[in-house]
Length: 188
Image 1 (cartoon, rainbow, N blue to C red):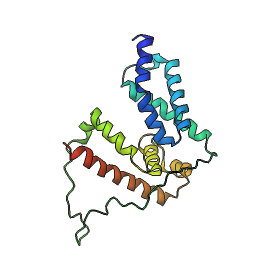
Image 2: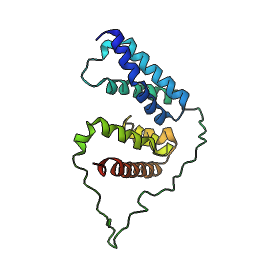
Image 3: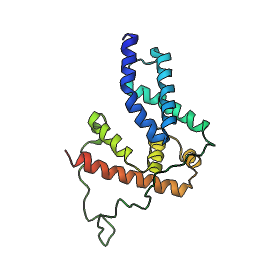
Image 4: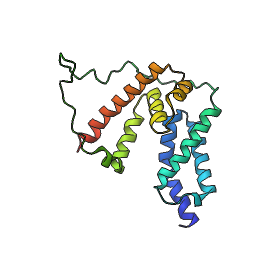
């Protein structure tokens, strides 16, 4: 692959990387910085991409490290979020329960989720569902599942109690499940 082809492929992935960084950092300037640093790191060492994974996967790996570096650097900075977040939303509110505590409505069949993970369409729906999470829940979910940070690190970074962390993570997972059921599994 020529250097020009490699650069063009990097540029093609920039939009996805920006969405990922925006969701994680919730700050346009910080996201731009992290993506720029990831792109520069990839351009500086194109030989490090050995083709054992997709280019997007390799770039997200670099971006994760740049995001973590940025979070560590900005640990003391205060970010005011002008958006309002509705943490009182209960995704199970619409579901009826039987007297024994079980769901009255059986969840739909999810087929083979492992096979779906390889699907680009599924990843696009998952990305859209993740983008729709409230800011705190989206950030917390990505820190846990994508950046693979420990619960302690996340609690410290987001200034959450362990109990609140698990409640927020549970809510995020429920919202993602509901979104995936509506937009992916039910649509098949």
